[in-house]
Length: 359
Image (cartoon, rainbow, N blue to C red; front, side, top):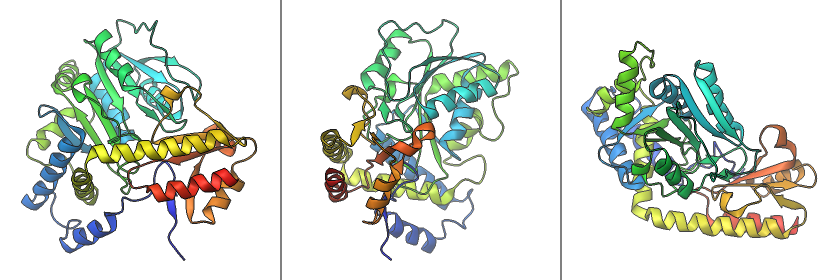
C-alpha cells in the first residue's frame, strides 16, 4: 500500500530527508551514546549552529531544548512572571497558554477575539503590572497569524515588558527579527517535519535576569528545566537530563538541509502554495475561508469552512493518498485545515487544489 502524504497541521509529513537521517543516526549509535559524551556535545553544537543560521538567532540569545512546546508554556510562565501575564487569545492554543498561567496561580489577563479573527492594536492598553506579553504568532487551531509588524509594534509600545512568541506552526517560515522579542519557541512536528517530542526555546539575557530575580524571591521556577538549569548545561553543549537525542540530531540535520536550500526559497515556495490554495478555496462556493481578513490569514495553516460536514471531502482526498486535517474543537466537523510546511511539495498542493476545484 503506497504511503499517504500528510497535510495535517501536526504531527505532519516528515521532511523528505528524515528517513535517511534516521538510518545514519542508527549507524552512528546516536540513540545509545551517553548524553554527556563528546560525540553528543558535537550533535548539540551542530544543531544549535544550524538553527542560529536558519532563524538568524543573535549570538547573545540562548538556544535550549525541552520535551515539547507545551512544556515551554509552563516553564516560561514559571521563569518570567511573578504575578501578571498578558495573553492574546483567538483560538484553542493561545487559550491554553492563558490557562497555564491561571493554573500556575498567576494573574492572567487576556485580550480575546473570536476564533478566526486577528487583533486590532490601535487602542491597546496592556496593564502596567503585566510582566510578560504572550503572543501566539500562528494559531494552529484557526489559521490566524499575528503579523510581524504588530509584534514589532508591541515591542515599541512596551519596551520594558518581556515579550514571548509562540512560533510552533510557523517557524522557520516567518522572518521574525528576534532582536525585537525576548523569547521565541516552537516544537518540531509541524514546519520542521520531524517526529514529535522536542521543543526548542530561544531567549535573551533579560529572561535569564528575570529568572534569577524570581529565584532570589523564593519563587519556584521549575526543577530540572528552569532557565537557569538549562543555560548552565547549554554553555557546555549539554542538557540537564537525558534528552530526546535522536530528535536533537534530526533537527540539526534537517536545519542543515534547509540552510543548504536557503530559507528564502523555502518561504517563496510556501507563499506560492498558500496563494494557490486560498485562490481555489475562495472560488468554490462549497467553501468559505475561515479567516476573513487577508492580512491575518496564515500561510502555513489554511482553514476553510464547508457548507456541510468535512468528512466526505477528507475521505475522498484520502483515497488519493493525501490526508487533510479536520477542524479543531467545536468546529471540527465542518472545517478542513491544510498544513503548508516546507516538506509539502508544490505538486501535492496542485493535486489537492484540483480535487477541491472539482468537489
